[in-house]
Image 1 (cartoon, rainbow, N blue to C red):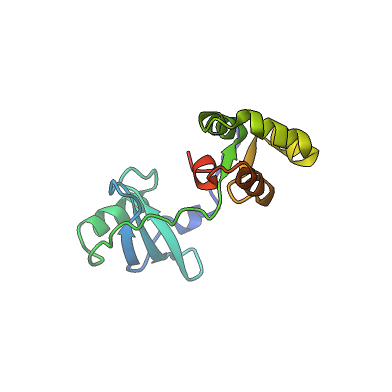
Image 2 (cartoon, rainbow, N blue to C red):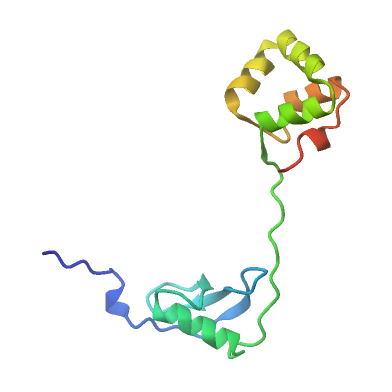
Amino acid sequence: MMLVTNAFDKYRPFTYHTPTNVRWADAAHTQMLMDVVFNHLQGEVPFRADPNDIEEHGRELYAHAAAGDFGPVGDYEAPPPPARWAVPTNIIVKRVLAAGRLAEANALLDANQEIKWRFQTAGAVWSDDPPMLAALAALGLDSKVIMARL
């Protein structure tokens, strides 16, 4: 039988210095983000505290933060949306069909084999793909509608 140990076991129990920048990690207020200095790491590190953490220090940090021991808990800030996203080709086809331009789109693809090959083999197209945006413009379709996020 082999005993498996954690490389950080020699530092247990983990000790830490007063966390800073405490804020909610999600809109439901189930976890908190904070910056913490631990005895086993170099410098301040980001940490996600959870009341159901499997580690005692995670539960402890959450409880102290929730009690206001580290100061007020900052509001949750949703991350900004990504600059681009993948749009599945089957969704593009459905949207072009709904716009009543499927026949014209097929003719355009037949006239441009490179775009047709990319469209048929990729499974998804980036929302800012220049050839796709040009093709939609040539069809008189609004790329913001056709390439909208799901």
